[in-house]
Length: 109
Image (cartoon, rainbow, N blue to C red; front, side, top):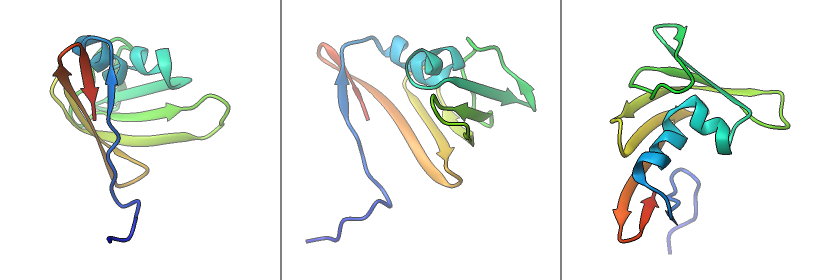
């Protein structure tokens, strides 16, 4: 049996929503603050992007949580505009968001 570590893990969840809605929830400041964060600021070429604009590779972010005064800063590595995002979190941890149609749900992994 392999030893359990937190070097890598996968979380999968089926959600009754459209791919477009879920991508918006992850790829815009407006979307992230609708369900997850107190505020999300994305910068492109060191200038804030509109809260409804989709993120793009090389954008940077500052995320602010509810009930916590700190912030998390990172960088968008990939964002294809429809169903895939990869970003750096907590320094050098790569996080991927993949959206896949499965019958009546979207599999988020």
